[in-house]
Image 1: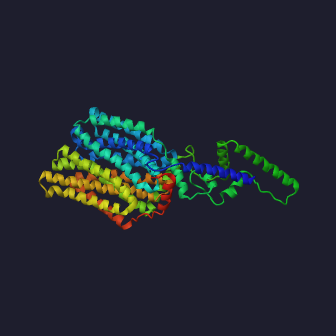
Image 2: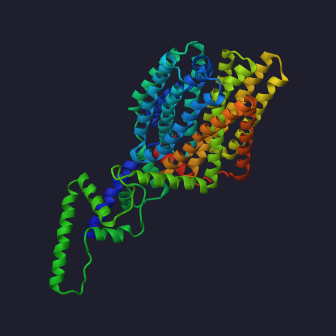
Image 3: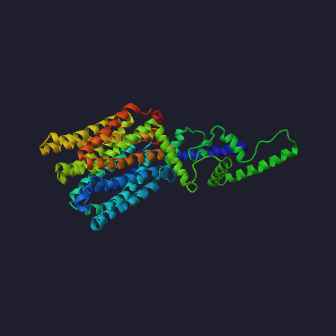
Length: 541
């Protein structure tokens, strides 16, 4: 009867394998799901854009705040909450699924506009705006972290750059458009009322998203080259203790000692045969119960052998979350590729935090540029970033990550130097403005070269089963760059000048580019052939 038990396990494995083979990755097979996720990203980016230009310009006339360090407090709270949310999102999404994080993130975006409107109408305290940005940062952290994982898993391993580029393109194009439109309304209230409507629609759409954990299991099985049916049965979470001997040794322990001594006397033989027959009859009876039999069989195997797999949601404790988070941090530190990318991500967000809080005042206060022109300059930088990074993500899949990361950081560094030098060299306003537009475009281009590629490079170094945790740690560290950049930028601009602050970030960007030249190597993608086969077999386009 042991042979029949093995046949039963084989049938279960084949059934699961058939279900996995029905999963299809790619745009064509999942265009509805991708459309839902893209709309949610549009709502997140739009709300972000509405406050990105308005709040720095409102700080002094509406709230009476003159210190750059105090103004940048709202960037600090945004970066801190987003970093924490990113750090938690990776682990939570691996345990509870991606969809729950998307719902939570979109829910947290709704109070942002309400709190800011209250601050403008009644309270007029800048700290209230900073509190609103706690919600905005957490919203971006939870929702965007989960969505980028969903897009990576939907599109497949060979299109990670496309997935990340699509996410960042959607967020930052919508952000740039609304950062420009918000100024054109010439009102402090209407843009945030519109933001409330947009955020609410994103929350509604989050319930239409479908979780992608089934793709994670599929990819884990492919990575492990698990072709044996019995392993398909047991590999509930992609973790097996002893794949070679698991069936031969553990299956026997689960159902009793089916082997008996042929040299025993007849009585002992008959007793053991009766016990064996009872267990076999039990298995045959279970076999008639369909799905219940599968669960029963797996439960008995796992219970008897104490296989170490990821605990259920109920049994998972906060201590284990902390342990997994710290393990992911150690991985990021020990892996030279990941560490270099993490430092680059921190530097890039330092730059964005300074650009967010300092550039509006640099143009308006230092060089007397009117709001309309400032809005256009602040449109060019994120718009070029948002559109172009979709293509840089795709090209990095084909040409390698290093060339984009190196050129991107050096281009940004040079652009910030030129940004500060132009007004000292050129006095004619329209010529100066035209050159500033080109420089802002190049800052966006440099950001597009690095922003999606950094995250795709992190994905190259991490297996599917732990990708959520590692990317969560990376995004945590990266968004702490907002905090570091806002504090350092505020201090430098208050005690030196806005120009000195921009020179400081130019130096930091140049150092990051040099780190990629010295320490980063393109990932050896040995999976390309397997990816091509997967595309042919699973409908990936």
